[in-house]
Image (cartoon, rainbow, N blue to C red; front, side, top):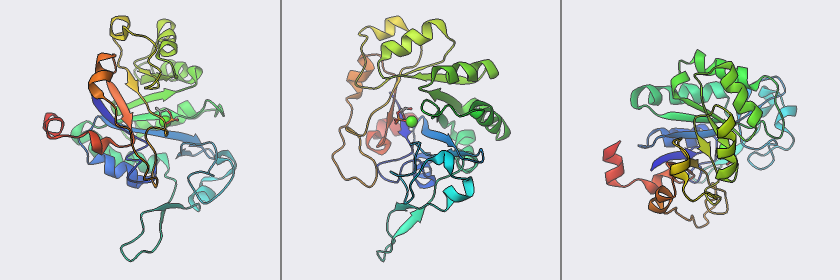
Length: 257
Ligand code: G3P
Ligand code: CA
C-alpha cells in the first residue's frame, strides 16, 4: 500500500501549510496531496476551502482576497517553547514547489495537486498549474485531480502527458468516468468502495481518501481511526491519502522505500 500525506502531515501540523509539507517531505512515503484555489488577482494558493474562515483568523472567500491580503491572514500553529502563540500563513503554489522540489528530484516524492474548482470553476486554473509545474521542472512528479470532471478532461487535452486522477465519492462513479475519458487513476472515498471485484474491473491505481470523521486535523487531539491496509488492499485499493502518514510507517515499510 502506498501512503500519501493528505494536506501534508495534517494531524501533526496545520493542513496545507509549509510546516505540514516539510514534515511529510522527510517521511518515506509516496507523495503529498494538497488543494489549490485562486486569489482575486489570479495567484494559485494552497488552501482547501473556498473561504478562509475555518483555517485562518480571517473571514470571507479566497476569491475575494488578493494574494497580498491572503498573506496577512494568520494560521495558528504549535506554540513556542515558552508558550508564545506562533503563526504561519497560506502558502503560494510557488513556495510549495520550491520546498518540495529537492525531495521530488532526490527520492521521487510525488505531488497530488487537487484543483478545487468544483464549487468555483476558476477560469484558467488548469493552464496556470500546468505552466508552473513545467517552470519548476516537476511535470513528471505531479498528479492532477479534481471533483470537477471537466477540469480533469481539460488537463489531459492541454497536456496529454500530464497524469490525472478522477475524484468522486463512490468508486463506481470514478470507474464510469474512466470508461469514456482518458484518466490515469481513480480517487474514491475510502468508505465508498461500492465495487467488489475492483481489480478485475480496472488496472488503474485506486487512491482512496478519508474524511475528518475518521482522521481529524491539527489541532484536534481526537482519536484517529487507522485503516486496515490489508483489507483495503484486498478490496483493490493501491494507495491511501491519510492525515497521519507517520502512523503507518513501520521498519519494513521504511526500509523498502
Ligand atoms: O484528494 C483526495 C481528498 O483530498 C479529497 O477530499 O475534501 O479532503 O479535498 P478533500
Ligand atoms: Ca484534497
